Length: 153
Image (cartoon, rainbow, N blue to C red; front, side):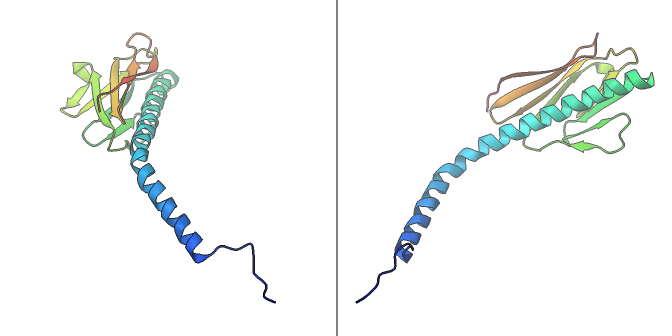
């Protein structure tokens, strides 16, 4: 009398499961690209807004001007009171709208905050993953707001 083992998988069943998993991954993988791009956009937007709020806070606390400086070409920014530059993801497209007096060169500009909380005002626009997000700085109050609209990717 022979006993048959039950409860295991045959080699054929394992190979079939691997083939099905491979096909599913091949179909699903292209859909992850836009999701990653959107996550990078949202993260970069929060970083920029946080840095702008930090600069405003420094101006209020210290009683002197504080600056947020954005280098669009190198995808990095600096904030008064922090020595190191902070990098933004390369896939995110950047642009800066600021006062003429705050333009350093073709790809670099600043938004300046004053001790009373006001600012020179401006906008940092970030695009990626089919979306566009703007970080606006109100010149009168120095308030930092994030806005969103559909991009044209």
